[in-house]
Image (cartoon, rainbow, N blue to C red; front, side, top):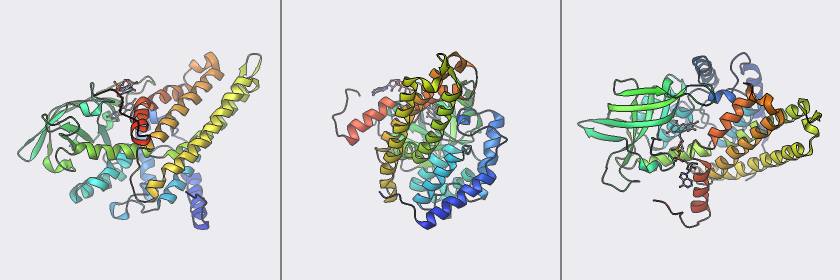
Length: 391
Ligand SMILES: Cc1cc2nc3c(=O)[nH]c(=O)nc-3n(C[C@H](O)[C@H](O)[C@H](O)COP(=O)(O)OP(=O)(O)OC[C@H]3O[C@@H](n4cnc5c(N)ncnc54)[C@H](O)[C@@H]3O)c2cc1C
Protein backbone atom coordinates (compact mmCIF):
# COMPACT_ATOMS: atom_id res chain seq x y z
CA UNK A 1 0.00 0.00 0.00
CA UNK A 2 1.05 3.59 -0.58
CA UNK A 3 1.37 5.65 2.59
CA UNK A 4 2.33 8.93 1.00
CA UNK A 5 0.30 11.51 2.82
CA UNK A 6 -1.86 13.95 0.86
CA UNK A 7 -1.74 17.70 1.71
CA UNK A 8 -5.07 17.29 3.58
CA UNK A 9 -3.63 14.42 5.60
CA UNK A 10 -0.50 16.41 6.38
CA UNK A 11 -2.73 19.29 7.54
CA UNK A 12 -4.64 16.87 9.75
CA UNK A 13 -1.34 15.62 11.21
CA UNK A 14 -0.34 19.20 12.06
CA UNK A 15 -3.74 19.86 13.66
CA UNK A 16 -3.38 16.73 15.84
CA UNK A 17 0.21 17.54 16.74
CA UNK A 18 -0.71 21.07 17.81
CA UNK A 19 -3.62 19.83 19.90
CA UNK A 20 -1.52 17.18 21.63
CA UNK A 21 1.28 19.65 22.33
CA UNK A 22 -1.21 21.95 24.00
CA UNK A 23 -3.19 19.29 25.87
CA UNK A 24 -1.14 16.21 26.82
CA UNK A 25 -0.89 16.47 30.61
CA UNK A 26 2.65 16.76 31.88
CA UNK A 27 1.85 16.71 35.58
CA UNK A 28 0.31 13.23 35.97
CA UNK A 29 1.44 9.62 35.74
CA UNK A 30 3.10 8.94 32.37
CA UNK A 31 1.30 7.01 29.65
CA UNK A 32 2.97 3.88 28.39
CA UNK A 33 4.48 2.61 31.58
CA UNK A 34 1.22 3.36 33.33
CA UNK A 35 -0.42 0.56 31.41
CA UNK A 36 0.77 -1.49 34.35
CA UNK A 37 0.00 1.04 37.08
CA UNK A 38 -3.66 0.68 37.90
CA UNK A 39 -3.63 2.62 41.15
CA UNK A 40 -6.75 4.65 41.94
CA UNK A 41 -4.84 7.86 41.22
CA UNK A 42 -3.61 6.67 37.83
CA UNK A 43 -7.06 5.33 37.01
CA UNK A 44 -8.84 8.63 37.69
CA UNK A 45 -6.12 10.56 35.89
CA UNK A 46 -6.63 8.45 32.78
CA UNK A 47 -10.41 8.65 33.04
CA UNK A 48 -10.18 12.47 32.99
CA UNK A 49 -7.79 12.30 30.05
CA UNK A 50 -10.15 10.03 28.12
CA UNK A 51 -12.94 12.58 28.59
CA UNK A 52 -10.68 15.39 27.37
CA UNK A 53 -9.90 13.36 24.25
CA UNK A 54 -13.59 12.65 23.70
CA UNK A 55 -14.59 16.31 23.99
CA UNK A 56 -11.97 17.19 21.37
CA UNK A 57 -13.28 14.51 18.98
CA UNK A 58 -10.15 12.39 19.23
CA UNK A 59 -11.67 9.26 20.74
CA UNK A 60 -12.83 6.18 18.82
CA UNK A 61 -12.08 8.09 15.66
CA UNK A 62 -12.81 5.03 13.52
CA UNK A 63 -16.27 4.42 14.98
CA UNK A 64 -19.19 5.64 12.86
CA UNK A 65 -20.50 9.05 13.97
CA UNK A 66 -23.96 7.61 14.70
CA UNK A 67 -22.38 5.79 17.64
CA UNK A 68 -20.48 8.84 18.87
CA UNK A 69 -17.24 8.06 17.03
CA UNK A 70 -15.19 10.41 14.91
CA UNK A 71 -16.20 8.83 11.58
CA UNK A 72 -12.61 9.38 10.42
CA UNK A 73 -10.87 7.37 7.73
CA UNK A 74 -8.44 4.64 8.65
CA UNK A 75 -5.57 6.75 7.34
CA UNK A 76 -6.56 9.61 9.64
CA UNK A 77 -6.72 7.14 12.50
CA UNK A 78 -3.20 5.95 11.67
CA UNK A 79 -1.90 9.51 11.57
CA UNK A 80 -3.53 10.20 14.91
CA UNK A 81 -2.04 7.05 16.46
CA UNK A 82 1.42 7.98 15.25
CA UNK A 83 1.18 11.48 16.67
CA UNK A 84 -0.30 10.13 19.89
CA UNK A 85 2.65 7.79 20.38
CA UNK A 86 5.11 10.53 19.45
CA UNK A 87 3.58 12.81 22.09
CA UNK A 88 3.85 10.00 24.68
CA UNK A 89 0.23 10.65 25.61
CA UNK A 90 -1.30 8.49 28.36
CA UNK A 91 -3.56 5.59 27.37
CA UNK A 92 -7.30 6.26 27.81
CA UNK A 93 -8.67 4.32 30.76
CA UNK A 94 -11.39 2.33 29.02
CA UNK A 95 -9.14 0.57 26.50
CA UNK A 96 -11.02 -2.73 26.59
CA UNK A 97 -14.27 -0.89 25.93
CA UNK A 98 -12.87 1.34 23.18
CA UNK A 99 -10.77 -1.23 21.38
CA UNK A 100 -12.46 -4.56 22.05
CA UNK A 101 -16.09 -4.67 23.09
CA UNK A 102 -17.04 -1.39 21.34
CA UNK A 103 -15.95 -2.50 17.85
CA UNK A 104 -17.37 -5.98 18.54
CA UNK A 105 -20.78 -4.51 19.39
CA UNK A 106 -20.65 -2.34 16.29
CA UNK A 107 -20.03 -5.53 14.27
CA UNK A 108 -22.28 -8.06 16.04
CA UNK A 109 -24.42 -6.18 18.59
CA UNK A 110 -28.14 -5.44 18.49
CA UNK A 111 -29.38 -1.85 18.11
CA UNK A 112 -30.42 -1.98 21.76
CA UNK A 113 -26.92 -3.03 22.86
CA UNK A 114 -25.31 -0.32 20.75
CA UNK A 115 -27.47 2.46 22.14
CA UNK A 116 -27.21 1.10 25.68
CA UNK A 117 -23.41 0.76 25.84
CA UNK A 118 -21.39 2.64 23.24
CA UNK A 119 -21.85 6.15 24.61
CA UNK A 120 -20.83 5.15 28.13
CA UNK A 121 -17.73 3.44 26.76
CA UNK A 122 -16.70 6.71 25.18
CA UNK A 123 -17.31 8.77 28.31
CA UNK A 124 -15.65 6.15 30.55
CA UNK A 125 -18.77 6.14 32.70
CA UNK A 126 -18.77 2.36 32.39
CA UNK A 127 -15.45 0.54 32.50
CA UNK A 128 -15.25 -2.79 30.68
CA UNK A 129 -13.42 -6.01 31.47
CA UNK A 130 -12.70 -9.05 29.32
CA UNK A 131 -13.83 -12.37 30.80
CA UNK A 132 -12.08 -14.95 28.62
CA UNK A 133 -9.30 -16.73 30.58
CA UNK A 134 -9.98 -19.27 33.31
CA UNK A 135 -7.60 -21.20 35.58
CA UNK A 136 -7.73 -24.13 33.14
CA UNK A 137 -8.45 -22.28 29.91
CA UNK A 138 -5.94 -19.73 28.65
CA UNK A 139 -4.22 -20.71 25.42
CA UNK A 140 -6.81 -23.44 25.12
CA UNK A 141 -9.59 -20.89 25.44
CA UNK A 142 -12.22 -23.17 23.98
CA UNK A 143 -11.80 -25.41 27.04
CA UNK A 144 -13.59 -22.80 29.19
CA UNK A 145 -16.01 -24.10 31.81
CA UNK A 146 -17.88 -21.03 33.09
CA UNK A 147 -21.46 -21.83 32.26
CA UNK A 148 -24.57 -19.79 31.59
CA UNK A 149 -28.08 -21.23 31.71
CA UNK A 150 -31.08 -19.51 30.25
CA UNK A 151 -33.70 -19.37 33.01
CA UNK A 152 -36.80 -17.51 31.88
CA UNK A 153 -35.57 -14.30 30.29
CA UNK A 154 -32.24 -14.26 32.13
CA UNK A 155 -28.89 -16.01 31.92
CA UNK A 156 -27.62 -17.40 35.22
CA UNK A 157 -23.81 -17.51 35.21
CA UNK A 158 -21.57 -19.72 37.36
CA UNK A 159 -17.81 -20.14 37.16
CA UNK A 160 -14.52 -18.29 37.44
CA UNK A 161 -12.43 -16.02 35.24
CA UNK A 162 -8.82 -15.03 35.94
CA UNK A 163 -6.20 -12.48 34.81
CA UNK A 164 -8.97 -9.94 34.33
CA UNK A 165 -7.43 -6.56 33.55
CA UNK A 166 -9.04 -3.67 35.46
CA UNK A 167 -11.34 -6.08 37.35
CA UNK A 168 -11.26 -4.01 40.58
CA UNK A 169 -12.46 -0.99 38.55
CA UNK A 170 -14.85 -2.85 36.24
CA UNK A 171 -18.53 -2.03 35.78
CA UNK A 172 -19.34 -4.49 32.97
CA UNK A 173 -17.66 -7.61 31.67
CA UNK A 174 -18.02 -9.50 28.40
CA UNK A 175 -17.95 -13.13 29.44
CA UNK A 176 -17.42 -16.22 27.33
CA UNK A 177 -19.72 -18.89 28.76
CA UNK A 178 -20.54 -22.48 27.92
CA UNK A 179 -24.21 -22.60 27.02
CA UNK A 180 -24.32 -26.09 25.52
CA UNK A 181 -22.15 -28.54 27.50
CA UNK A 182 -22.88 -31.39 25.05
CA UNK A 183 -21.66 -29.58 21.91
CA UNK A 184 -18.04 -29.87 20.61
CA UNK A 185 -15.89 -27.45 22.58
CA UNK A 186 -15.68 -24.60 20.05
CA UNK A 187 -19.43 -24.72 19.70
CA UNK A 188 -21.79 -24.32 22.62
CA UNK A 189 -20.03 -21.10 23.75
CA UNK A 190 -21.87 -17.78 24.00
CA UNK A 191 -20.65 -14.18 24.34
CA UNK A 192 -22.62 -12.51 27.14
CA UNK A 193 -22.48 -9.03 28.70
CA UNK A 194 -22.82 -8.94 32.48
CA UNK A 195 -23.12 -6.17 35.08
CA UNK A 196 -20.33 -6.60 37.64
CA UNK A 197 -22.18 -4.68 40.36
CA UNK A 198 -24.33 -7.47 41.74
CA UNK A 199 -24.07 -9.96 44.63
CA UNK A 200 -23.31 -12.86 42.26
CA UNK A 201 -20.07 -11.27 41.01
CA UNK A 202 -17.02 -11.17 43.29
CA UNK A 203 -13.69 -9.63 42.32
CA UNK A 204 -10.48 -10.66 44.09
CA UNK A 205 -7.51 -8.47 43.15
CA UNK A 206 -4.20 -10.06 42.07
CA UNK A 207 -0.91 -8.27 42.74
CA UNK A 208 1.34 -8.22 39.66
CA UNK A 209 5.13 -8.47 39.62
CA UNK A 210 5.16 -4.69 39.07
CA UNK A 211 3.42 -4.31 42.46
CA UNK A 212 0.09 -3.04 41.14
CA UNK A 213 -3.28 -4.65 41.84
CA UNK A 214 -5.61 -3.37 39.13
CA UNK A 215 -5.96 -6.95 37.95
CA UNK A 216 -8.01 -9.79 39.35
CA UNK A 217 -10.02 -12.96 39.49
CA UNK A 218 -13.77 -12.75 38.92
CA UNK A 219 -16.10 -15.31 40.51
CA UNK A 220 -19.66 -15.77 39.25
CA UNK A 221 -22.14 -17.40 41.64
CA UNK A 222 -25.63 -17.35 40.19
CA UNK A 223 -24.88 -14.00 38.58
CA UNK A 224 -27.77 -12.79 36.45
CA UNK A 225 -28.00 -10.89 33.21
CA UNK A 226 -30.96 -10.37 30.84
CA UNK A 227 -31.18 -12.66 27.80
CA UNK A 228 -30.93 -9.50 25.68
CA UNK A 229 -27.26 -9.23 26.78
CA UNK A 230 -26.31 -12.08 24.43
CA UNK A 231 -24.06 -10.82 21.59
CA UNK A 232 -24.56 -12.72 18.33
CA UNK A 233 -26.51 -15.98 18.43
CA UNK A 234 -26.77 -18.50 21.24
CA UNK A 235 -23.86 -20.99 21.05
CA UNK A 236 -22.13 -18.90 18.35
CA UNK A 237 -19.93 -16.96 20.78
CA UNK A 238 -16.65 -18.37 19.47
CA UNK A 239 -17.09 -16.43 16.22
CA UNK A 240 -17.86 -13.22 18.13
CA UNK A 241 -14.92 -13.84 20.49
CA UNK A 242 -12.55 -14.21 17.54
CA UNK A 243 -13.70 -10.84 16.15
CA UNK A 244 -12.75 -9.27 19.48
CA UNK A 245 -9.36 -11.01 19.46
CA UNK A 246 -8.60 -9.84 15.91
CA UNK A 247 -9.33 -6.26 16.95
CA UNK A 248 -7.12 -6.76 20.00
CA UNK A 249 -4.17 -8.22 18.12
CA UNK A 250 -4.52 -6.00 15.09
CA UNK A 251 -4.70 -2.84 17.25
CA UNK A 252 -2.44 0.13 17.15
CA UNK A 253 0.70 -1.44 15.68
CA UNK A 254 1.83 1.58 13.68
CA UNK A 255 1.57 3.68 16.83
CA UNK A 256 3.69 1.04 18.54
CA UNK A 257 6.40 1.41 15.90
CA UNK A 258 6.52 5.16 16.59
CA UNK A 259 6.63 4.56 20.32
CA UNK A 260 9.53 2.16 19.83
CA UNK A 261 11.45 4.73 17.77
CA UNK A 262 11.13 7.00 20.75
CA UNK A 263 12.26 4.19 23.05
CA UNK A 264 15.32 3.77 20.81
CA UNK A 265 16.20 7.42 21.51
CA UNK A 266 15.84 6.77 25.24
CA UNK A 267 17.96 3.60 25.01
CA UNK A 268 20.68 5.44 23.17
CA UNK A 269 20.65 8.23 25.76
CA UNK A 270 20.87 5.60 28.48
CA UNK A 271 23.87 3.95 26.81
CA UNK A 272 25.57 7.34 26.38
CA UNK A 273 25.14 8.29 30.02
CA UNK A 274 25.77 4.98 31.83
CA UNK A 275 29.26 3.99 32.98
CA UNK A 276 30.14 0.50 31.79
CA UNK A 277 33.41 -1.47 31.93
CA UNK A 278 35.51 1.64 32.53
CA UNK A 279 33.89 3.72 29.77
CA UNK A 280 30.32 4.38 28.70
CA UNK A 281 27.96 1.67 27.54
CA UNK A 282 27.69 3.25 24.10
CA UNK A 283 31.39 2.45 23.53
CA UNK A 284 30.81 -1.27 24.00
CA UNK A 285 30.68 -2.84 20.51
CA UNK A 286 28.18 -5.50 21.58
CA UNK A 287 25.79 -2.91 22.97
CA UNK A 288 26.16 -0.84 19.81
CA UNK A 289 25.34 -3.89 17.73
CA UNK A 290 22.25 -4.66 19.80
CA UNK A 291 21.08 -1.05 19.47
CA UNK A 292 21.55 -1.19 15.70
CA UNK A 293 19.72 -4.49 15.43
CA UNK A 294 16.76 -3.16 17.44
CA UNK A 295 16.56 -0.10 15.21
CA UNK A 296 16.43 -2.25 12.06
CA UNK A 297 13.65 -4.28 13.64
CA UNK A 298 11.58 -1.20 14.44
CA UNK A 299 11.67 -0.29 10.76
CA UNK A 300 10.59 -3.82 9.84
CA UNK A 301 7.76 -3.56 12.33
CA UNK A 302 6.60 -0.33 10.72
CA UNK A 303 6.61 -1.77 7.20
CA UNK A 304 4.87 -4.96 8.25
CA UNK A 305 2.24 -2.94 10.11
CA UNK A 306 1.47 -1.03 6.94
CA UNK A 307 1.06 -4.33 5.13
CA UNK A 308 -1.25 -5.71 7.82
CA UNK A 309 -3.44 -2.62 7.39
CA UNK A 310 -4.42 -3.57 3.84
CA UNK A 311 -7.51 -5.63 4.80
CA UNK A 312 -8.69 -2.78 7.02
CA UNK A 313 -8.45 -0.32 4.15
CA UNK A 314 -10.82 -2.57 2.23
CA UNK A 315 -13.29 -2.58 5.09
CA UNK A 316 -12.39 -6.09 6.26
CA UNK A 317 -11.54 -6.98 9.86
CA UNK A 318 -7.88 -7.72 10.61
CA UNK A 319 -6.90 -11.24 9.56
CA UNK A 320 -4.61 -13.83 11.18
CA UNK A 321 -1.69 -11.73 9.88
CA UNK A 322 -2.32 -9.49 12.88
CA UNK A 323 -0.62 -12.27 14.87
CA UNK A 324 2.60 -11.40 13.04
CA UNK A 325 2.51 -7.83 14.34
CA UNK A 326 1.59 -8.91 17.87
CA UNK A 327 4.37 -11.51 18.00
CA UNK A 328 6.90 -9.07 16.60
CA UNK A 329 6.18 -6.05 18.79
CA UNK A 330 5.95 -8.02 22.02
CA UNK A 331 9.20 -9.92 21.45
CA UNK A 332 10.95 -6.70 20.42
CA UNK A 333 9.76 -5.07 23.63
CA UNK A 334 11.32 -7.88 25.71
CA UNK A 335 14.66 -7.61 23.88
CA UNK A 336 14.76 -3.81 24.15
CA UNK A 337 14.08 -3.79 27.86
CA UNK A 338 16.62 -6.60 28.40
CA UNK A 339 19.20 -4.38 26.72
CA UNK A 340 18.27 -1.52 29.07
CA UNK A 341 18.80 -3.81 32.06
CA UNK A 342 22.14 -5.04 30.68
CA UNK A 343 23.28 -1.44 30.24
CA UNK A 344 22.20 -0.52 33.76
CA UNK A 345 23.62 -3.62 35.46
CA UNK A 346 22.70 -3.86 39.15
CA UNK A 347 21.44 -0.24 39.07
CA UNK A 348 18.57 -1.58 36.97
CA UNK A 349 17.21 -3.40 39.99
CA UNK A 350 16.24 -0.12 41.69
CA UNK A 351 12.57 0.80 41.12
CA UNK A 352 12.30 3.01 38.08
CA UNK A 353 10.95 3.32 34.57
CA UNK A 354 13.25 0.71 33.00
CA UNK A 355 12.57 -1.89 35.67
CA UNK A 356 8.82 -1.39 35.25
CA UNK A 357 9.15 -1.58 31.47
CA UNK A 358 11.30 -4.71 31.75
CA UNK A 359 8.78 -6.50 33.96
CA UNK A 360 5.80 -5.24 31.95
CA UNK A 361 7.35 -6.40 28.68
CA UNK A 362 7.16 -10.01 29.88
CA UNK A 363 3.38 -9.72 30.15
CA UNK A 364 3.10 -8.53 26.57
CA UNK A 365 4.27 -11.90 25.25
CA UNK A 366 1.43 -13.56 27.21
CA UNK A 367 -1.71 -11.42 26.97
CA UNK A 368 -3.87 -11.53 23.83
CA UNK A 369 -2.44 -15.00 23.28
CA UNK A 370 1.15 -16.06 23.99
CA UNK A 371 3.98 -15.92 21.47
CA UNK A 372 3.75 -19.70 20.99
CA UNK A 373 0.07 -19.40 20.15
CA UNK A 374 0.74 -16.57 17.65
CA UNK A 375 3.34 -18.81 15.99
CA UNK A 376 0.81 -21.65 15.80
CA UNK A 377 -1.72 -19.31 14.15
CA UNK A 378 0.83 -18.08 11.63
CA UNK A 379 1.96 -21.62 10.85
CA UNK A 380 -1.52 -22.99 10.36
CA UNK A 381 -3.59 -20.11 9.02
CA UNK A 382 -1.05 -18.02 7.10
CA UNK A 383 1.50 -20.62 5.97
CA UNK A 384 -1.04 -23.46 5.71
CA UNK A 385 1.11 -25.95 7.63
CA UNK A 386 -0.55 -28.99 9.22
CA UNK A 387 -1.99 -28.55 12.72
CA UNK A 388 0.30 -29.43 15.63
CA UNK A 389 -0.50 -32.42 17.83
CA UNK A 390 -3.06 -31.12 20.30
CA UNK A 391 -6.76 -31.46 21.04
C1 LIG B 1 -0.97 -8.57 31.79
C2 LIG B 1 -2.02 -9.57 31.39
C3 LIG B 1 -3.32 -9.14 31.20
C4 LIG B 1 -4.33 -10.06 30.87
N1 LIG B 1 -5.61 -9.61 30.76
C5 LIG B 1 -6.59 -10.51 30.51
C6 LIG B 1 -7.96 -10.07 30.48
O1 LIG B 1 -8.26 -8.90 30.69
N2 LIG B 1 -8.92 -11.00 30.26
C7 LIG B 1 -8.63 -12.31 30.02
O2 LIG B 1 -9.54 -13.08 29.79
N3 LIG B 1 -7.34 -12.77 30.07
C8 LIG B 1 -6.32 -11.89 30.31
N4 LIG B 1 -5.02 -12.32 30.38
C9 LIG B 1 -4.75 -13.75 30.27
C10 LIG B 1 -4.05 -14.20 29.01
O3 LIG B 1 -4.92 -14.13 27.90
C11 LIG B 1 -3.55 -15.65 29.26
O4 LIG B 1 -2.59 -15.57 30.29
C12 LIG B 1 -2.95 -16.26 28.03
O5 LIG B 1 -3.94 -16.53 27.08
C13 LIG B 1 -2.18 -17.56 28.35
O6 LIG B 1 -2.99 -18.44 29.06
P1 LIG B 1 -2.47 -19.12 30.42
O7 LIG B 1 -1.96 -18.04 31.31
O8 LIG B 1 -3.55 -19.98 30.94
O9 LIG B 1 -1.21 -19.99 30.01
P2 LIG B 1 -1.25 -21.45 29.36
O10 LIG B 1 -2.25 -21.48 28.27
O11 LIG B 1 -1.37 -22.44 30.46
O12 LIG B 1 0.19 -21.54 28.71
C14 LIG B 1 1.36 -21.90 29.47
C15 LIG B 1 2.53 -22.00 28.49
O13 LIG B 1 2.29 -23.08 27.55
C16 LIG B 1 2.38 -22.59 26.22
N5 LIG B 1 1.38 -23.26 25.37
C17 LIG B 1 0.10 -23.48 25.68
N6 LIG B 1 -0.53 -24.10 24.64
C18 LIG B 1 0.38 -24.24 23.65
C19 LIG B 1 0.34 -24.79 22.32
N7 LIG B 1 -0.77 -25.32 21.81
N8 LIG B 1 1.47 -24.76 21.59
C20 LIG B 1 2.62 -24.23 22.09
N9 LIG B 1 2.72 -23.71 23.35
C21 LIG B 1 1.61 -23.71 24.12
C22 LIG B 1 2.07 -21.11 26.32
O14 LIG B 1 2.63 -20.38 25.24
C23 LIG B 1 2.73 -20.74 27.65
O15 LIG B 1 4.11 -20.52 27.47
C24 LIG B 1 -3.99 -11.43 30.70
C25 LIG B 1 -2.66 -11.86 30.86
C26 LIG B 1 -1.69 -10.95 31.21
C27 LIG B 1 -0.28 -11.45 31.42
